[in-house]
Length: 564
Ligand code: GLC
Image (cartoon, rainbow, N blue to C red; front, side, top):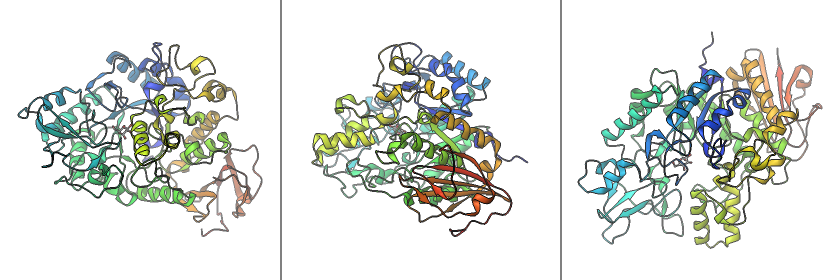
């Protein structure tokens, strides 16, 4: 009996609409552009497309500041375009997944305009207003995630409002039942339009502590990261269960919530039958190269064993409860070939190593646009070239910490969210075929070598490797259902694990280093069938630089040289 749901068997493709495909020539990607590319997406084996927000927005944070949840941003198209996209996608077996941003709205949302208009307005309590401290300072010393105070003073009514992110993104007050009701109504509005699920933004921040108070200072600005004060507060799950009951329960859709600050041990409370969501995007494997304070100017060295442990912990935590959304990229992260590999890496091999892991962990792979081409980070000559609000905030913090402009810029090169937001590289034509106009954000200049057009022709390309992996996942049930067991845990070069189902095993070996490595799994050469690799051949017992292999072993397999 096939007990898996459709979204467990498929692939999710994340689209950043502004940068995906511009059909109108105004330099900004749009919904009709996405519709044009549905066949490309279907050919990847994708069954769900997650759109980052496409609603009406002043775009201070590129749509994560919503001014109207039930209408489409005019730069992206119309509601008719959206309905057409949903229908055309469905024809190709693809469901559209919407991004719900419910921690905050735009300051241009009519609710906030009302809320700030008068102390006595009925929507005053829809947001979080507090008096200044007796000395006139902000109510607490919290630093917003994009830098600067998490509080902004509003002259008209003489109080401060709270914003976890930018000042243009005031936080909603989830304690107010009217607020929750109207948010559930919005989600149901989109379900009625036929969407296949939701990615739910910044969900760990919705519940604020009962008492809002100062925390120990953690930066030269005299502030403390708001995350420490408001993430994952006791009582949050009560609201999330209500959300589930009122919106998702019993529907053939999936939910995946962005949950920075939830550890692997806590996962069972959040996902699965008794949890609030189907999947949780946690960042324990993504935040390894940064200090907890999440300031970009405090990078820390990391080891492969940390990455392996974070992934293994999440795999274990989702064995009994929920389901794992495997991901290495999204619109907030640098490109994975830059993040997980040294500068001099062969980027094509590296992109394939990441892809191998992405598709062979237990869970649903989430592919971020361009990842399937091995798109890479960009480096622009000054902060003015950047659009990302977080990059600007972090640049300012680095200067405040005493770094030079050049050093601050180097942090931006490494971590900027614009690394992932450069336009999609379709062809080697002008502007990579993304737009006939002037692109809203510069392209990565490598689009002549890295683009979908070329890669379709080239058997050895990253794109064709993704196609092969997708096919493998369809052909071998064990990749969907087999349990996960890590091998060679202490190895700092190789990430090795197996997926096990009855007498079958799939063994995955990935060399994350530039050095050749002998590995001691000798019996593999006897009865292991190579399913896929990123080199043309596969000599026994040697893994070359950045080599990835996937073997299938049937019958009894003894694995020597490791604890299994
Ligand atoms: C999430 C989004 C990010 C956005 C933030 C505020 O982290 O992924 O892009 O800036 O929430 O909504």
